[in-house]
Image (cartoon, rainbow, N blue to C red; front, side, top):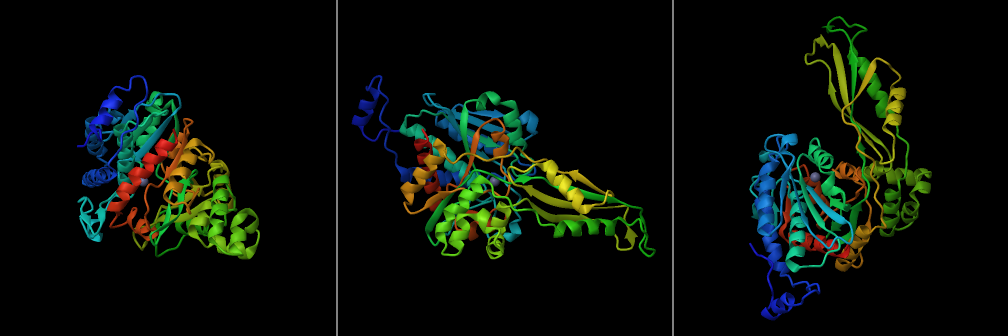
Length: 468
Ligand SMILES: [Zn+2]
């Protein structure tokens, strides 16, 4: 393991005897850091943290070992609350405390992988065709290692810091989010000076070797899953009855499927469309420059809403997903139920949405149960030191690219941290082709290019430096 080192003897002597003055940051060998980070990522991917059951403790101990070699004090936390084999990890790189801290957060767990659909063993961390392969490479062990090495690089270089850098690795993001929830609940003392937090959520637009924009997610949809249940009377399928719950449920679902949720433009989404308008020619450019107005024009509306992402940015969405009735063709079941994946825009009221659904169904025999309560609403400012630091780091790399605020249609742990007053951002430290991400994240053959690892470390390093 490389430690902080001095490039020349003379520099060492000067920095040691500089007295009260802050030492000049030491030069770093970025190629060596990239190679080191690639090796660490491959090792991290070899630790199977499939959730369930998670086994995040193994990942946490792996990170702890690396951090301790670099001189960090590391805490392994919350095992009692999270259960056997699970843990959160916390450490901090101290600054001079004149400004509030920045937290880097990633989740140790990964979603399950089906090896038969993969070209390689999903937990091999194998390097092949210029990629490091493994479940979690993009979501989000790769991000975690970019954060880790950026913080280590700041320490090795001796960069003067006004803000502490907090590093947190959580359990269970992919299932119940209990890692972040427990951490926030049990350790307000560790978070009380944190102003900004960066984790997953943003998405850079990269195609044909060129980056168009760097995405910073300032908002995200809120999961509000529902189960609809209708009770009936079980009987033989050969003698139809009025007490069969299946047709009643189907009628309710049909009404929901036909319901169009209203369009609503939130601030981050409005900025996103204005930003990307430059990529289009007229009339689309004009439409995107003022999406709220354009959505009143039927042609513009049809074009905008035909994009599944944009549609989800602009409204609460409802997807009918799970369905269960009888498990035998000749049996009328005593109960029928359906799962409905409802996602709310950041500023929408869950109670209003539930009331709307009940009104549309218009049948008191259909019972609604909330499977997952929405997390706290999230909309972070685009005028903060952190956002400006991302803009500067992005501009350094690609002067023609811009930074925009694409919304996360899924869910992250950000709302759990936002709830305690932290401004949270989703950033993407890599240049990944859209198709690569689409296939890999929660899919098969997830992998990150070797070149991306070094890019990510340095991008995060610069953001942290500029945000001081
Ligand atoms: Zn993730």
